[in-house]
Image (cartoon, rainbow, N blue to C red; front, side, top):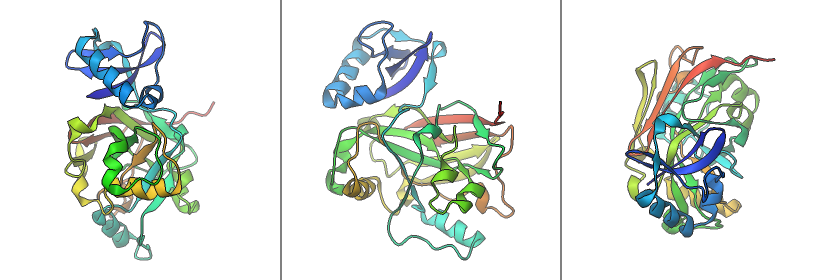
Length: 290
């Protein structure tokens, strides 16, 4: 099942996607229903969506605007250096780089979340804009100290993430967070795909193209810490809430690690795809300061 956040006629809501369009899950026409609210209902919310998928009236996707599946999570985590191929390319371009010996995490501030097809803005304060295709998972219920063996039970679904980075700001802020959190630098979407439809999340192909040229091509099978180990690690520290986002890492091919670097430029079209999950695509635009 695919769950999407969308707007139509100025009303934002959540719907279930079918082959003929999207079924609004709001209880009454004209009302709003957020993804976070739906997920907060737990198994009851998912079952309600399945019933509406079967008997609801669909709206054509051409009549709606898709937004990031989750827009106001309590937390947006991302793991660094979780693919050996990415570690190797960083070491090749920076021999002084120290790879992590355990899971290394940073936060992307929720303000960076962007729609699946909305422009990525190049801020005037930074020029080294980079892409990273990632599988992201979305937490489905409140949980703490979840064992890896049971972690699949707390996942509501999966989505595509482009972990946009401003590399010059990333270098000047050693915690990484600021260089990862500029507005529009967390594209997500185009929807949340439930685990039963995705299957094993560790067998998915990932691809990122820039202007049609393949820059990244890998598989989630390359992860050093898998999705379930990531949940165990994070939930040891803090309570995870419905709607929380976990971006699970990126394979080799990032622009900053190429020789010479091939960073994003104004007008570039960036397309990120995760097998059995979906595709997001955006144009890089210059941010205009009023």
